[in-house]
Length: 61
Image 1 (cartoon, rainbow, N blue to C red):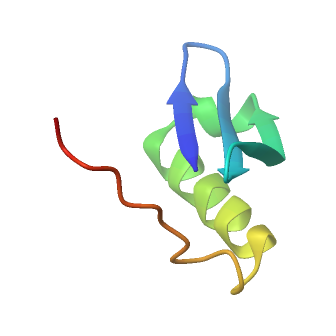
Image 2 (image 1 turned 45 degrees about the vertical axis):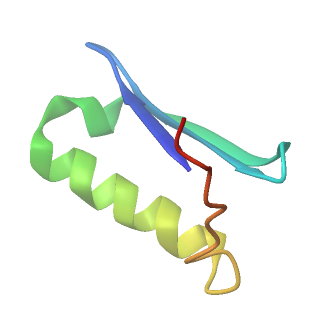
């Protein structure tokens, strides 16, 4: 999952093995850190427990 913040919106993209699984944008979330944290928690909950912790380790180099 990658999250990006801009002056008017906050968005996320979620990939598994290079395939886009989900994405979202929120203008309200960009209003304050409190709104941003709440929206991020909703996005994480939306992805469900089977996606949490899915992390592919990349070799350093």
